[in-house]
Image 1 (cartoon, rainbow, N blue to C red):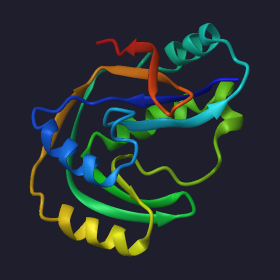
Image 2: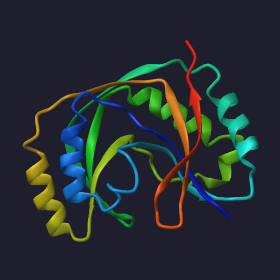
Image 3: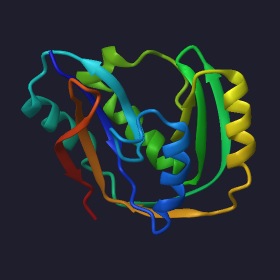
Image 4: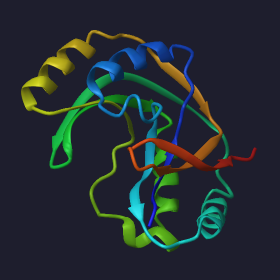
Length: 172
């Protein structure tokens, strides 16, 4: 059974800054491009075709939108010690998409944890390393802007690599 996830892969003019931090602090940086997770990894027997239809139906009335990211925060929890790039504009659209995707076909995969849209810059193996990474990344004053017009379905490969299996264009 394949593990899939649904994400946004924003393209920023200053992507090199994000890569700089991810290369230092995110063990997945070589396996998956910078992303905003909409549906967290799940395993099931739903066909890709059925999933594709669910996503298209869910996104039918969602138009392309702009996101702006700036500033970092830290989130230590049971899943890891995360360094996050904050979304300061466009968050409401991402929340809406997240909720629509977790309806109907994928409802059972919603774990009930609060969802905070973000782009992960790092996942550190200790609180101490997270504190140092946070101190370092907090110096970054860059603003990141992107138009979001595509939602992607990723299959996680055997080595943890990202394999895009479908893309869904948002319609004007």
